[in-house]
Image (cartoon, rainbow, N blue to C red; front, top):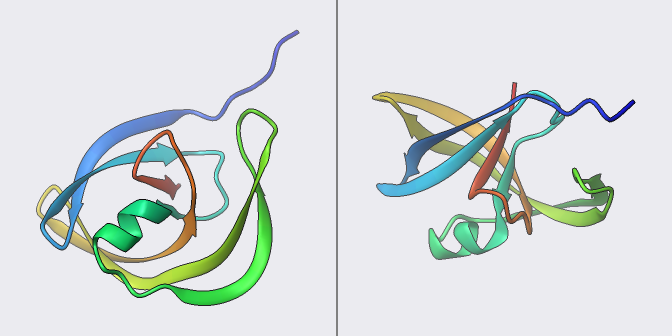
Length: 97
């Protein structure tokens, strides 16, 4: 009965000195950044082959761009991550584990 849901953790980090809310998701296959956040931060968005992303409620969203090698600050450490741009609503960023 019921559905399994991936375990998630919420935390805060920063990109280019701006605080962002991050959802760490054990069920995600890619890293995603909210489209409006990418635009606000002035991150270059590289076109990629368009693909559909299945989200938690069963809907799909279209992803057609990626921000490459973004410097993400977490607890005093810097990680360089590629972030697919997607119109997510739950957080500014979704990181896979």
